[in-house]
Structures are given as C-alpha cells and as structure tokens.
Image 1 (tube, rainbow, N blue to C red):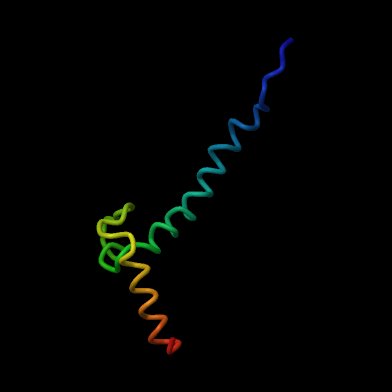
Image 2 (cartoon, one colour):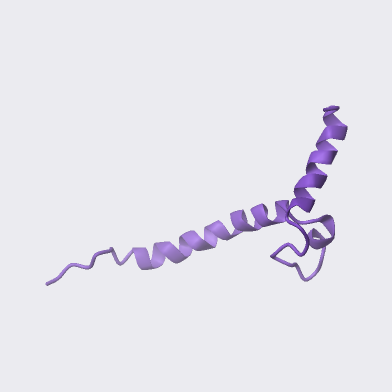
Length: 68
C-alpha cells in the first residue's frame, strides 16, 4: 500500500487555518483604508483610494498627540 505524501488531517487543518487567518488579513487591509471606507455598509474589502491615505492620517494624528 502506497502512503500519501500528506496526512488526511491536512484536508481539515488547511481550510481551518485559512478561516482563522481571514480576520488578520481584514485588520491589515482596514489599517490602510480611509474612515469613509471603514464605516461603509456593505463593507469594501479592498481600499478604494490610495493605500497610504490611512497610514498618512494615522501618522498625522500621532504627531499631534505626541508632539513629534
């Protein structure tokens, strides 16, 4: 009998791992969205504008807060 190159458990564990990784991907994408896209319903998963818009606003608010 020939052995499979992977365990049958991989058929269950790989989709489960992808399911658990989706919130992390959404958090990273949301970090680069402007406020209008974050509060939009239904949500847009890919940022509409420039990806640096959200990070630029974050750095501007940090400068105001920290006095940098």
